[in-house]
Image (tube, rainbow, N blue to C red; front, side):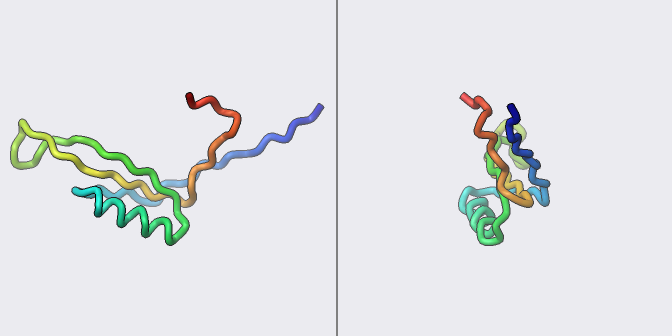
Length: 77
């Protein structure tokens, strides 16, 4: 019995941008959508440049050649 196995090619990272605000990150995501590119967005806390004891939030937008494919057989629960 043969079974068709789809090949999943991981999209290539084109660029990474770091933003100080969510609205700026959203603008980059919308621009990538217009260009039909894939994106990965996440936020993180980093030390404040002015106050070493404080943290500030930044938004990271990674732009890929295409949207990542999801393997329908994978368990991501």
